[in-house]
Image (cartoon, rainbow, N blue to C red; front, side):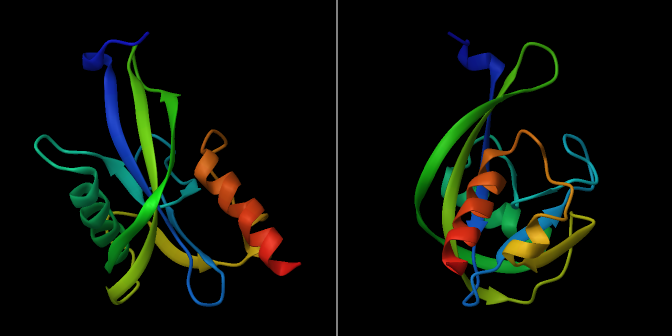
Length: 138
């Protein structure tokens, strides 16, 4: 069991457009610098998951979203003895214009493009999204 003070709560936003493409960002900072992942990050003190998802997506992509549902959560090693407790949410775009903000790049990716990008090897949301995108093509 991991103590609460060693868990870093994080959120991720899994967002598909009407064409079935997944929204990915290229991380500007560690962890995962220069790797592609779904938008997301740490939940700030006093923030709800919903507030964190909306803020992170806006900061990284310029888009406004609403949460559709919780997809699940995973835990990943963080620096020291800490653990990233990542809660991934399916989201829908409600406004804004796609542009990279806190991220190096942001783009919609189809299933074929997903297989060519260096994604975070430990990031299950991207792998799940890749499987989902592949299944939508069949």
